[in-house]
Image 1 (cartoon, rainbow, N blue to C red):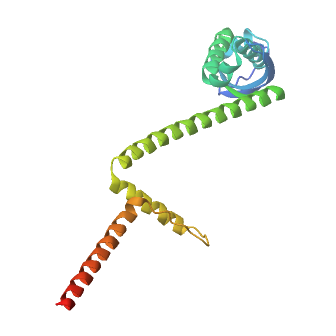
Image 2 (cartoon, rainbow, N blue to C red):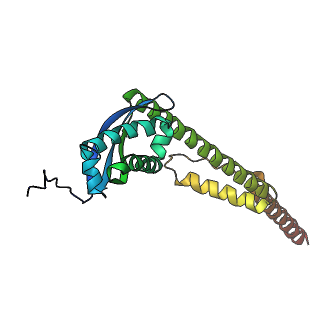
Length: 219
């Protein structure tokens, strides 16, 4: 075919490539290593062949530089928590830059964010301190609720002698359940008062019966 200089085969399917880990200095001056994956396809084969010498290699280089540029405008907290937003921003920027080459960037995903070892230790220490502080707050709130409940129970018991006696019996039951060789039961005076009254009445009745018996003997 005399009219054809040479043929170039262009794959129109969607292909992907990995962006190697890039050392990035974040907005808050933290150095992180980030890698990504890019999905693209050729939408205009003529432009991909005529307007750029090697569209695949050029797209890879542009993806790496775009990743560094986008991440350099974010702080570390945003990079860790807003990966989807950053991926969309990078996809938009990369798609606009490669559009004249007939390349359509369909998707970009941030794969991994690696932090320096010292920073990882510092973040782990901070997270542990936060968990401990939260646990102390929860424990303090529980003690406060328990103290309010005890105060309410104390107010109820103090106004009801029957409730006080019931609480006393419950305490004795708990003591008896323990494995002790000797158990001393401290009885309150109000428990002993009925016994004293009964014994006193019995003695009085016995004395009166004895006096009556002696009087009958005299007659």
